[in-house]
Image (cartoon, rainbow, N blue to C red; front, top):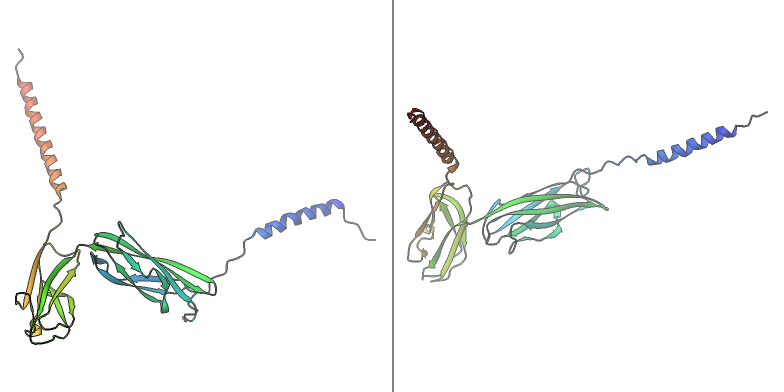
Length: 272
């Protein structure tokens, strides 16, 4: 003959089941490990620009869902670009959005005539089959007042002069080039070069441009074959804090000696 289970035991078992089931459902499921590598990227380009200059900046990205485990790109890369600064009127960083074919895209920065520190931002996204990973890249650009040299080229009257390149030297060392297009006979063409170097040593410096390789076909206005322009770079301001400390120390010393002399005079004065 079978024995019946007491009602009290059934109630206890029911309460235990009611307590365990919600607890089990509250345990978080283990997160799946991503099957792709980390998304990373860089921005490269000039860290210093002269006012009103333009420059190219290359964005490189790799990894994320867009790349399979064997290194093959199976998805797409995209980006959104922006620029911040004290005054971004006349400043542009473009195109502001688009795709990144093969993980590389070149953006153009145009700056205004305001010296300031700009920060370039590029938000890159790696996507594949609805899975996305993003990475925010940033790059600082210092906009400075450039050192400039300008002149006017005069072509000879004998005929057309083919395109050529002028080398600009600073203190005898080449620092840049000026491409010159085709010059018709007798043409007057302005040229200019801007140089930016925040670490240029204090003192006098000289830009020079020579037309010697043009063999007399072109000259500078006035007939010169070469020109030179000198400019002065001021050094950092003096550290007046050192002299201020010395001055305060000397003043304290003089005041202390004066107090000793006055005190001694008062002590030695006879009483009336």
